[in-house]
Image (tube, rainbow, N blue to C red; front, side):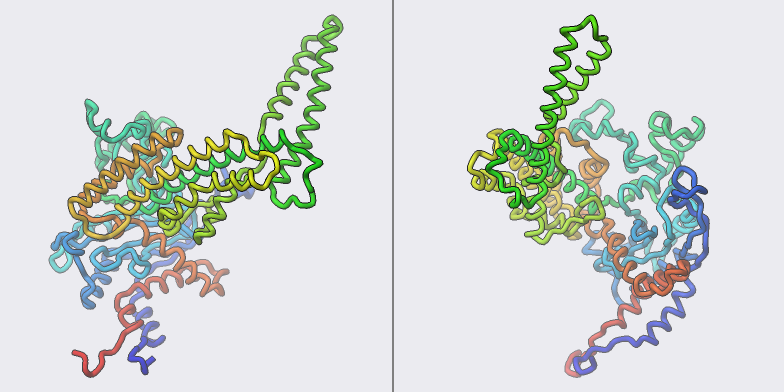
Length: 579
């Protein structure tokens, strides 16, 4: 490497840095946590188990150490005025993944604060992020975070914000759940109010619902306590507040989870497309069963599940028709001899006939195996978009970005008509009912329209650039247009917490920052999961010592985040003729 003027810090230097600083940062211990269990000693599917917990004993000191190192290396920036020149912004947040819950901090006053190398894990435990587990592990940081918020460094004051997905935000701020009536941790607008467009709510007699504060959350919790701590009554007595907030960071300083907003909203749009395509597949299935001609089918050529389901359904329909004819014959005989037959027997026969008639109307095949719905996955793969099989076939952030490209949207929207045409051309008789073409047109138009407006929103909010007045106005218009289109085109889809965040709280945050939310969202926390998974694999020899393994992963992760270590990892020497 020296031949190309590159020097790399030695292994000894890196281990020395770890020994001097990292070993003094963390405390490790086994603590009782609630974990899932199906064993006999469990209760309601869970039990208490001693689990490893590794945490920084002095969070403010750790933050200051990172600031000092960034200061020495000239890394600090105020992002062209986005951050006031008298402030240092610190993001605190968390995320679960890989069997552990991790808590992070990020210094926003550096370039690429959401990068994995700038996301510092200060606490981690092996277990689910239940409210009880979060309280047991995080309540020790309440005073430390309050001290950090009130302290100054080199004449700069601190401004703290909190980031995380919707579930974590609700847990940290004491909300019952993401599905509760008052699920929003930022404001007191109930779920039924989300159905009403923002502009209409602004014109209400009482205006918009009040914003939450730590003081209001404490008052709500006292009301919950006075009522006897009954979660099912929290929606009426405490605005769905059932716990005290864990950290003293005001709800107005919650960073909108734009990554999860984009993923969640896109998932709703795509699943609506799948439902529409499945509905067309059912029409095709029913039509093929009715027009099935066994003599014209080469059964050895059947390859896909859908064709097999058609043939299986034809056999079932034949059997059910035979049963139905027999039951109708029995009913006719019973009715003719009503004096010798009880009313109960006649009613039983009539009920069976009704069931058989209902079964004959069903289009019974596995969802996703129809010709159109299955073709959607082929389109995604053609554009190198691989859905996450083990996460409910959802999309990740990069995949959502690809799906927002006009070429991908057009390809997906055109799939129903394309497959219908292929089916018609491959069969001698009409394989497609006429109404399927009308439905395909409606599905394609709806998806293309909604996705075009969503893509515009995604582009407006998911970046870290400073924004002009016109760009902020464009973002406001994009959000309004999208929500109007969503409500009219997907009227049967519920307005979720993520959509409420998008409509009510994303734009005020953009106006406050005068920038996109790419620097402030939860992306950095998501990036850490893959990094720490690789670290855990590297020390797999410790898998039977979970405490030591978690401690080693935390140490290695912290070491790689240190600005001093990063500065030595890859450094180009200056040439003699360079200043």
